[in-house]
Length: 340
Image (tube, rainbow, N blue to C red):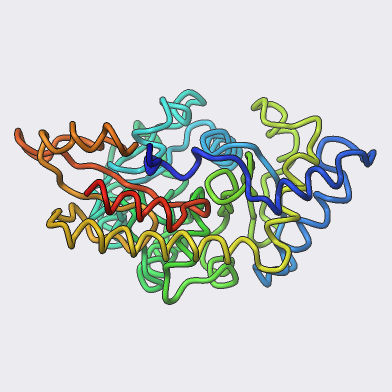
């Protein structure tokens, strides 16, 4: 079986595992106050060129989104995203469970438009009954998007400006941040640090067993955020588990090196699929590739390849997602070529 259904269907990168094994016998402080977590935070701040950053480690994406959003918003505030936003459709109502409404605007190939955001905020600001509504307090996007597309620097800058105009927090979900950075021609970690209030660097999908690194970009972490993490059940007693892994990821540029490998594999995958005549559902530059496949062909392919059935394209065809990762090999794609 060829496994291309997700980018977290594997273990950890060998260098991450080596660091875990090598440090296993060392005794450290708990709850993230260990030397490995401190080293990892320092390396992330250096990579972001953001010495004023505050870095916190959590274990998973949904947990991170729910904790950051609840921590930054007042009890009566809502978060704005797009209809295809991860917090809107794929997190089992985790954000709303904490009392924060998710306001979903129309997406454009998975992306939020700054003009749509401004139009919504203008409407809201001029609605005479706005005090009866959930108050917008944050804008959430993901980089890359759920559909594997990328925001340009200009698009993020425009959203950032609307957020500043209306005093909205700007939060970027980076569960696949490495793959987005590796595919982007104009966005880097230092640039992102200057164009949002908080983002996170995903490890679970980019080389670790688990872990996400939350970066508040200008000493703006919510008061008592450590306590907020604890309250959400998100505080690891053995905080070194995430610290050690990110210490490895941010040594010798490993994070971006393995991310670029995934993008190289994804571009080869895209070429294989299009050469065989499959229609792209969306032209993604990242590690997620979406194609339209006849239903009969889907049943044949799934005997040999694990991929995601994203949804029906029409009665005769299915939208299917194929995903590469740091762990995808040339041998995987050679095998896929034979199947196709």
